[in-house]
Length: 126
Image 1: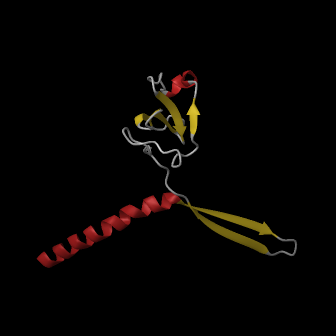
Image 2: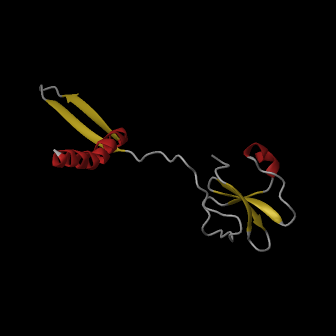
């Protein structure tokens, strides 16, 4: 009796990750079926399965405070000359010697002389 219980417990432990992974995989797949009718009476059925990547939930900024800002690594780099237009995006007046820069979706406060990053507002331009 003891061996049967241990075997059942081991089977449950092995099968539980497989059962739990099945619904998550089902959400990612989409199947499209196209049916075409030809004049001669034949029916063409085309099935297409598409896998979609899961949506990113947490946004992580590429830049960090204290890091040196490199324009070559920046995506969609542009300087923000008038920070007042972006007050709704949490931008504030840069201190003397600093300027705001947009890199992708991030707003980065960069020192003009040294290129060191003073602040990062991740996802400010989403």
